[in-house]
Image (cartoon, rainbow, N blue to C red; front, side, top):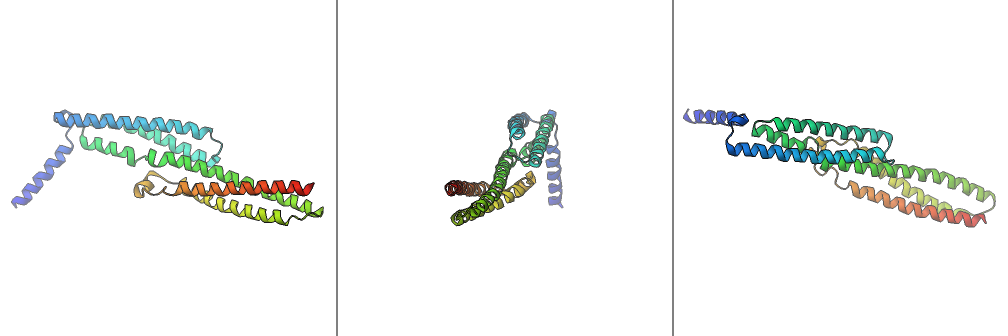
Length: 233
């Protein structure tokens, strides 16, 4: 019975102390509260500055698809507004518990540096590659038309057709990667990162792999162009 009373008394004390207003805080507690609010506000300002800069880049870039640009713009705007509101809330807190909760949500609620900004950059790269891959596909069709003309004129295009096949394979492989990355990354939210901190691991390397395939495909395209010029003489 005595232990139960002690336990109940302890719970009551902890609960009450957690909700003590600023006016009832000790000097040490008040200092801690002031520090949390100041540092939290500083971190919010730092993120808002980064988001503002990112918003300008997103707006100007031509590599993003219209849909992805709209999605990222909306997310950056929402995060900026949310952080501004959080700063106001944090500044008005009168308990250490509430202030610490607000400060923690700067990270868990937005994941600006860990997810949102990297997400914008990765989607930009993926979209740029997808657009380039589409150009390669169109170029391949033009090469086929040119081969038909050369064969009609009695030229042997067998070697060039083999090179084109290699080019198409590289472009298809790159396209598979770029489309998969775009679809995976554009939908990610802070809660996804909170559940799995490794969610973006390897994504940059995969995009680099797709990029390397496109570089190789470009070399094949140049070989084909040069070969067509030679056969057309």
